[in-house]
Amino acid sequence: MSGTLAPTTSGGQRTREDNLAMVLGLLADSARPLSRAELAGALGVTRATASSLVESLESGGLVEETGRSPSGARGRPGRGLRLPSTGPAGLGLEVGVDYLAAAVTDLAGHVRHRTIHPAEQRGRPVEAVLEDLAQLARRALSEVLAQGVEPVRAIVAVPGLVTPQGRVVVAPNLGWRDVDLRVLLRARPVLSELDPECDNEANLSALAELEAGTSGRTFLHLSGEIGVGAGIVLDGAVLRGERGWAGEIGHAPVVPSGTPCRCGSRGCLEQVAGQEALLEAAGLPAAVATALSGQPTAQQLVAAARAGDPALLAGLDRAADALTVALTGALNLLDIRTVVLGGLLRDLAPWVADRLEEHLARSTVSGAIDPPQVRAAARGADAAVIGAAGLAVQRVRARPARYLSPVA
Ligand SMILES: [Zn+2]
Image (cartoon, rainbow, N blue to C red):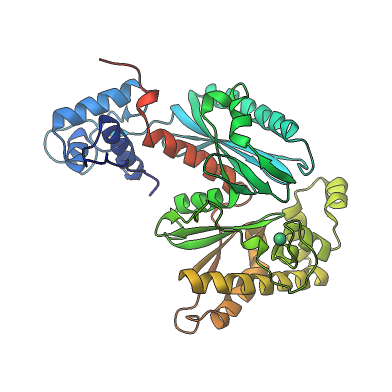
């Protein structure tokens, strides 16, 4: 599910590191410990080679013995091997529009730390945002280090267009334009040691949904926050597009000649289905709502919806209708039948999903035969940062050599 098999070299010969990565991938994908003999069989190598690979990984703390034979293994009893809950791990960080977040996932895939720090980030100098983010990272590291978990890679989630080199071309809701984020992160103590990479938050949220395994391997995951982003997963892989910018559904024009959007266009989806539009519908301007109660925004909106606030319910109907317009084109184009509501939209799914599903059954070309399914995401507001930590772990598993002790 989450394992990453390493690519082979151009000649088809696998390197030793490819084999190490494959061992880690097999263990990650297996629901039970595996024996050296099973690993040798799956890799197509001798038992001696498999034992040598395992020895290297054990020395670096990337594999551990369970102390008992793996169930179902045949022949001579061998000790079971699994990924450890200590040692090298992944750090996820997120710059949200109105929060910062950090998470740590260990090599075995367990979430070991999670913090969401609500705070407005719009219009702040990038360096000030990164200083606060680094502070969250330091706190996360000191907490997990005490448990023997040591993050060695970091992925930073951002609500904007990110190049594969980690440059944020534009993040309209943060007010960022042309920020060389990876370079800035690599210049910071602590973070520089974690070889930080950057990715779009909607893609990372979709990865978290894929890892959760509850929505299958092909779906469109919507992250509803202040902006609305889509992560498109086709047959287990995130569709990134030619420049890595796919999924900007929040700027699908759903209201012709609607109000101007921060992206420069008008009548975009997020102006109807984004957090601020919904707060406004409920008569809860964002700043006032936060100052008055200190409650997370999602809880306020859910409370208002539960109380039957007619203005908010009308706003949620408008959001479902706008989502129908934006999603119909995407589902027809990509042949996707599962829509996953994430972020704020996950919390509001009880008031949005049925209407959206009914409308999509009528509006999509295949709707009468095999109607789209709309479901709530496995994870809520923390999906992107958990997805980021999970991707950092995948990076460790895919290229493990540098985390191993130099053994002869
Ligand atoms: Zn827009």
